[in-house]
Image (tube, rainbow, N blue to C red):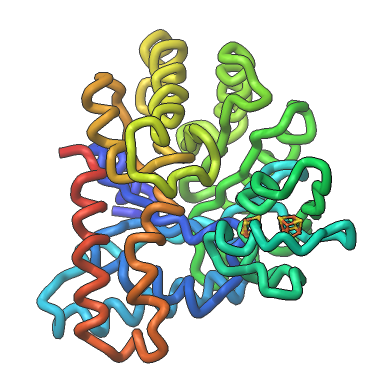
Amino acid sequence: MSRFEILRDLLSRGKYFKLVCGAGNENVEEVKRLALVYTLAGANGFDVSATPKVVDACVKGIDLAYRHAEKLGGEIPIRPFITVSVGMPGDHHVRKAFIIDDCVDCGKCIPVCPTDAIPKDYNIIREKCIGCGNCEAVCPPKVAAVRYEHNDKALSEILPLCLKTGAENIELHAAVPGDDKILEEWKMVSDAQPDNFISMCLDRHHLSNMHLIERIRAAREIAGERTMIQADGVPMSGGADDFNTTLQAIAIADVIQKNLKAKDKTFQNMPILLSGGTNGRTAEMARMCDTPYQGVSIGTHARKIIKTWISEANFENDLNAIRAAVEPAADLVKRSVVQ
Ligand code: SF4
Ligand code: SF4
């Protein structure tokens, strides 16, 4: 089977679990460790920043998992697929925060940053920032000292480099208004990877249900059966492990299912990934709601449950620490895919 067919098969059985390292996460050491742990835990996909050095770190983490697998008594039946994330200006996934001089040094933003990107001098560490907006949310409204810049990359140049380094899929974060520019970028993404799935990540922040469906139709016109939709509930909000956090991820998948997949045969087999607020309750809630899905994409929550171990200095060579991190990760993967 080709790699496209292998991924299509995983999706058709609801067995695709993608660990999101963070579209803006350029912390290569962390990405390598995440890839190591979640490959051993049974994840078959990783979502990383569209940066060759980050893709390379992910490849190295997967290779390391293969080297450790036998010693840890596990096997890796399918080599995980690496997706690189690119985004439209304005999309949360591809922005970087910075703090302006109006900051009053209240310190509220430091503990809420999930990646420890805010040092005491408030000069945000760019490589670590994933654009989640937690710092902005706690910054006093009268001060409003957090700003963002778009992590701009020339797609036509960067994507071939990422694919050459080991990425196989591309995801376009398109949760912004304005169709023409998005479809132009989508076409570029489609041309860059004609042999495997490409994914459009959409939420309903700017789009009505009807507009959402129209955009998916337009995306499929361009990429055909290679089109995958990442149904993003509330982007980067999955830190809490409860039903409410994951509610919108199920809701958007349900909208696509009822308004498109159930009505139009062309879209019957189009894969939907649950994302944006996904956590350990996502699959359970999808089952409770009878909402079908083909894969789950988890970021904040999945990274959080193994943070203690992967932050250790000698983690990669410490088999006991790796084993300890793999345990909760494997449990999350197992509970998240379709049973
Ligand atoms: S809280 Fe989020 S947006 Fe702010 S610096 Fe940390 S990662 Fe970046
Ligand atoms: S929350 Fe806002 S005002 Fe307070 S330290 Fe952070 S950036 Fe400065």
